[in-house]
Length: 90
Image (cartoon, rainbow, N blue to C red):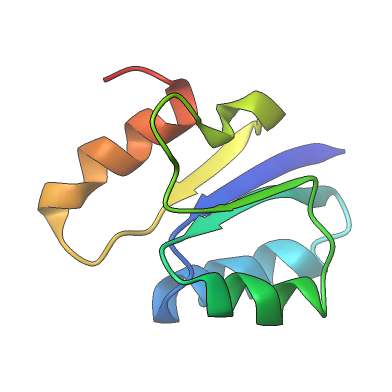
């Protein structure tokens, strides 16, 4: 089983989530988004090991060690920060 994690559950992030969730060899391990509402709605339909809304300092979804990682942020200037959320590096 391949473990996956997604940061950003907007239009593109939800598209990624829908493709990952139906793949028989992939398990969605962790998700993160700035909207608690999105996480609440999503949690009604899928279960994930870890979820967070905007990772607090010192927290990263790398704790679930996903092999597949999608950092889906709306602007390129956010990509590096979201990618570091997976690794715990600044």
